[in-house]
Image (cartoon, rainbow, N blue to C red):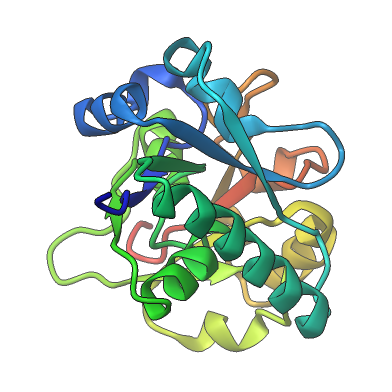
Length: 229
C-alpha cells in the first residue's frame, strides 16, 4: 500500500472567502482532517473550513498554549506519530492551520517531524493575517524599497525592533497591547500605529489609530508605518 501524504493547509486569517482554491481542493480530497486542539474546545481553523470538512474524520492534534520546551516537544512528537499512523494506512491528511503554514504556525513543528521520519509532507500557502489586516486598514505594508519586519509581540521584549528602519507588524499582540502602546509612545511611533482585532472573524474591530484601541485578544495585529508622515 502506498503511503499517504500530509498537507499543511493555510486557511487564512478567518474569512472563509479567503481560502485559496488549492486549499479548498486539498481539504475536499483529504481522507482525514487534522486540527490543532488547545483543550478548550475552540478550533478556529476548523470553523473557517467547516463547509468543506463535514462528514470527514477528525484527528485532534495537541496545541498546548505553554512555553515549556519539553511539554511542547512531547506534543509535537505525539502529533507526528498520530499522523504517521494514518499515512501508513494510505490516507491523505490535511492539517488545518490559521494564516499561512510557514509563518508562526502550529503546524510547522509537526511538518518537520513527519518529514524527518521519512514521510511526504507538503505545505499549501494561505493568506497571512497581516495581509488581511492591511486590506481592512486600506493601506499598503511596504512600498518601493521599504522594508517590513514581522514581530511576535507575545514572546519577548520587542523594543529592540523599533530601532530597525522598517515598517513593523506586531502579531499575537493580545496581553502585550498595553506594553506595546507604551513602548511605541516612548519611541514617538504611536501616532503611526493601527490595529485590527479578530481580522475576518466574529467580533472584528478595526482601529485606524492604535492609540484609540481597546485592549484586544490574542488575534490582535498592530501595524506601524514608518514610511508615512
